[in-house]
Amino acid sequence: MSTPLDFAFSPIRDLHQDRTRRIHGLFRTTMGETERPAAAYCLAHHALEGAEAAARAGDTSAFDWYQNRPDANGTALATPTAVGPRIIVSPDPGRMPRSPISDTAYYVLGPDTTVASADELALTTAAVATAARHGFGELLANHAVVTCLLRRKELGDTLVSWAITRLPGTVYTDHVDNAAVLGRDLIHEAGHNWLNDALTSTGCKLNEAATFHSPWRNSQRPVFGFLHACWAFPLTMIYTARVLTETSGDIHRFLAGDLDQQRRLLATTTTDHATALTLIPHPALRQRLQTVYTEALSL
Image: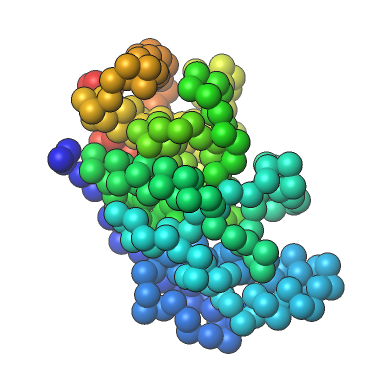
């Protein structure tokens, strides 16, 4: 088993507990406050978004449904995994809404939500177990509570994944029929969720005028996006280097090629990354970002 990276961060824990209490206060309930804090935090945000959308639409039935289920029924939908109960769903990407809460499509747990197929549940639980075995269990436990599996693709196709700040702990991702590859993408998006929570919980206000060249997008990016990339991609590099030892054939070649590409891209960011880190005022957070970045550079 690989040595786990340290994803425990007390400001994030406090944020999860405080935000959950506040949201549950709106629903006049204390549900979840003694349960898994990260899961309760994630599901409370789904309930809040669902209730707000129902209120805006004048849908009293849906609003009452969320009012009575401040976990958005996630507890009932959960599947056991190596990092605790997870909610694994497979929404139709073509029917996922867009709204002012997100530049990208998203999905909120609701009255019509059902769990993913048996094959998709098995794939995702295997992916979570693989990620946990290689040191990323805590990251997924606290920052990938809900997984929305989107398009089924072939190995070598472009896989699109994302997370949004309004639904922390939720991951949206395309997938291929391989646990090692899905584990990589769950880690990437959970990493984004971790950093969003870390920045919020430490009160870090980043200089919006500061921009840096992102080799992943081949464009200038604000410091927020640049540091996100220099955190999430190194996490997947570390995971990929660890999981390669148990892969073979096409999967091994695919992941090895991805790791080689990420090495080349990351190597171009060293000077800018050092400068960008100086814009993080919280010493402990700055050190976390540096540690992961340095390990990835050494691969």
